[in-house]
Amino acid sequence: MRPIGKTAMEPCHVRRVCILGLWLVAVIFTSCARIDKPKAQNLIGIIHDKTQVSGVPVLKHKILRDEVYDSPLKTQITQDVLVLDDITESKLETLLFDLYVDAKERCGFKHASHPNRIYIYAYVSEEHARSGMGQWIGMLHMEGEGAAPKTELNQAQLHPQTNDESKSFGLTESQRKSVFQEIVHAEDIARSDADKAKLKAVIALRYGVTIDNLSDIAVEGMQKDWPLPLPPEE
Image (cartoon, rainbow, N blue to C red; front, top):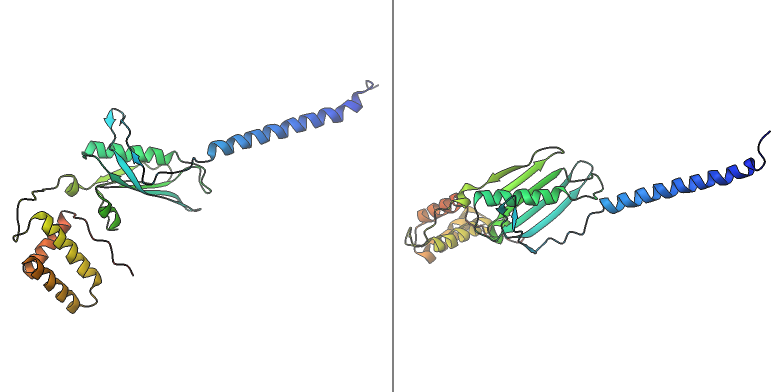
């Protein structure tokens, strides 16, 4: 014989267990959503100045670009960074790794829990960053889940041979940088070899140098990674 009242009590007990189970599932999913949701990224244009990481001072810097590409094939973060302090190799590498750690910890993406591609480029001027010609002083890249980050440093920019008082072709380095920018701009806008020749003749006349001097200045600018002019608008 069944105890009196047990049959009547079972449905109520089961309902309570089910309701409790559903409530726990809802709490877990809500908590996960709160954890995985990334904080708003307001990085652009802000000057960042951390004191130090692992005992090494972090260079003062400003984020110029912070782009996210999220697809089934890859979840990628790309950053351009303007360095505002005097640069050494160790400080630059520390900055790149510090930015990498911050980027790697970001979450809440659609196709991956965390980015599996990270590219960070450090520049000494906004002109270098805007040229679109890879004129970074240092860069870090991580390609693939579980891959180790790797850094590359531009030794020509890290150890420039600068002496603005020394003259070549009767021009200081600052003047030769201006000539270099004009040469590149002429190459960009010329529609034919004849146009290019005319534009270079005007530059040579303006600065009192020869066409051969222009070629030498162009080589010097590329070797020393001088800033390039912005590409012409189409």
